[in-house]
Length: 168
Image 1: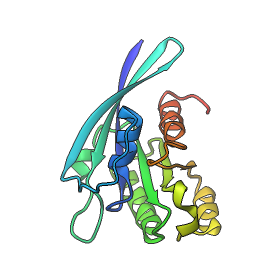
Image 2: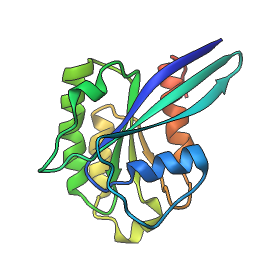
Image 3: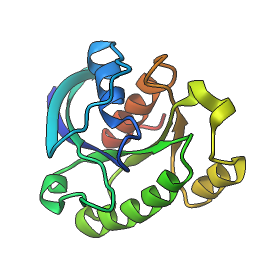
Image 4: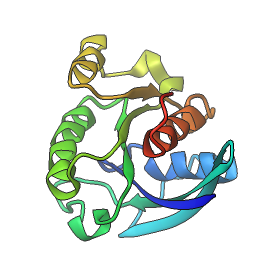
């Protein structure tokens, strides 16, 4: 059985949403930063036994003081990745605000918080207590690095399993 699921990647500007998608879909990473304008869409199929889930990945422009996540882009999403940059603590605060806004728009849908840039933990601005706080909120948190690939597939797999209603 084949099913499609719209998955949005949201977070502050320059947290690595596009890099996570590129690593997951094409196994590539680029050091060059290119701002996403609007939304970029990619697909990636995930198989679970007899089921195939085609993830339609909506890589959305970052949330900052100049632009907001567009509610129209969120409509119809089966789940989302909420991306945080481990080297910039303020992106964690943006994620908390975004999660509330997305919940208002979509209701309760599965999501995974991805703390990106785990290859740079020596430069992290996020403290262990911040991660504990996210866990207390009931968030599923995955540490990942778009650069090395560590944790990237696990984050997408965890979300795919949640969308399919499976425990991971």
